[in-house]
Each structure stands twice: as C-alpha cells, then as structure tokens.
Image (tube, rainbow, N blue to C red):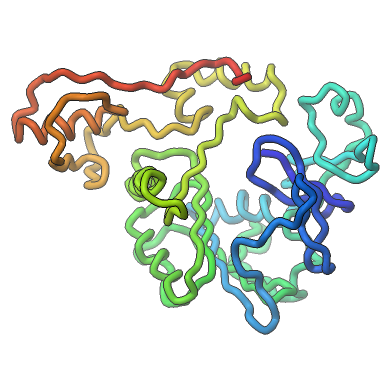
Length: 329
C-alpha cells in the first residue's frame, strides 16, 4: 500500500492504491490534495470544523489492542519506525522509502522515521483522557479542527451506545459480533461511514455477513452500500521478494496462504462447534440445478434446497482460487 508524499516527513498520509504515488499539500494550509493526474482529489466525507465538530469512534479488540496497536498506528512516529522516508533524488521532496527498490535500499543511511499519522500539532493540548497513560490506552482526545476521537474495546457485556457518530473504524477482530448492529445504528442520525479492516475470520459471523453483503452490492449497485477490498501480500511493492517468499514458506499449507497472504475468507472449513447462524445455518434457495460453487457452504445450501433434510451426495464442482506462492506479474 503506497503512501502519499508531501514536503514534510511528518505529513505522510496513507492511500489505498497499489501503484504510483500522489503529492499532498495539507488542506489545513489552504492547499488541496493533488492526485497523479494533477487534479484535486475530491473529499468523500465531511471534514470536521470548529463550527461543525465531528465525532469518531475507534473499536479495538480489548484495551491492550488500543494501547499497543491503535496508539502506535495513529500517534507514534513512523508507526514505531515501521515507516521511513527519504528525499527524492529528482524532486528533493520527502517520500516513502522503498526498501524493495535497489536504489532506495542503497540509500538506507539517508532515511529517517516518518512523522505520526496524527501529529501532536493537530491535537488540542490537555485534551487526552487516559485509561492507562503508561500503557498508551486512551479514551478520548480532541483535534484542533474540533473532531473528537473516542476509543472503545469490544469486550464487556454491552456495546458502546447512545451517541450520534460521524464515523466508526474497527481494527481487526472483535470479541462480540452482536455489537455490530448497535454500532451501525450510531451512524444513522449523521449518515456516517463505517470502516472495518481485518484479517478474515470465519468465526466472526458479523464479518462474514458484511463481506456477503459487499458481494451482493457489487452485483447490483453502481454506488454500493458496502464495498470490500481484498489486499494480496504478494502485490506489496514495498516488501522485498525474499521476505515475501520466506513468509509464504512459513505459512505452510494452501489454507494458511489463502488466509494470511491472499486475504481470503475460507468458507470451505466450517467449525463443528460454536453455532453462529450466519455461518452454520443453511437456508433454502430457489436454485435446484447443480452448478459451480465457490465453497462448501454454497454446495450444502444447494443440496439442502434440493433434498430437504437429506444431505445425500450430488454432483457439484467447486470453483477454487489458484493459490500460487509466486508474485503476480
């Protein structure tokens, strides 16, 4: 995932394209964000202002996840030195250092840690509220543009509730999938956005359901209500070939590669225990003819629709995704 570049290493910003870079000038300074075509990139969501401050929730698995992962990603320089920058030889501007590029690799001594995703200058002084200062577990902070950011763990008997929210970001897994409905309801009043980035977990039926909704929306809507983006480790242009090869060998079998490297949701493997209706409940459909099935769940659904409670064997062809260890060309 390339990083947009700017004139200052403290202003590096993530973008979700696999190829190319874009130049960034801070909108707070009155300059637009410029894309690869030289034109301003339109904002998709409203920006918080002092006249209309926005509220955001961040959900982590537990308080440890908030302190170790969320705080590191948002507020620590270079995400704890995971992200480094270098002066471009042509433009002399700071950009992301690419250790997979031989020319960049030879200039490693010229690199420095990038700034944090949200630098201190954008945070209101004395606005932090801490669950554990030493553990970096924060509850709340306010940005200079008026935005308020809350952090909640997914643990406990009841989900966070009651407030109107402009945006919710869930990072990785959650303990109780039943909380998702309540969190999404928080977005209704302000027509907010919902973002969930996660390693695919079949035990988390809320994630399975959301990915299924994304697949349905992709076939029916030009502006889908739910969109899914699958990231393939082999396409990471900022990782060395040998590092990816070693990682693929450590993963071992094809199923681990599919989950960890290709980001696939493995519905061919259904748990014998822990009943989750959205995963383990097979519903009847109108489809009666045999065909091509993407996974075991779809085949069982067709079989049940045809034969009722008798799950006898029948003709089926499973469509599997080729799981090669080679990097795509």
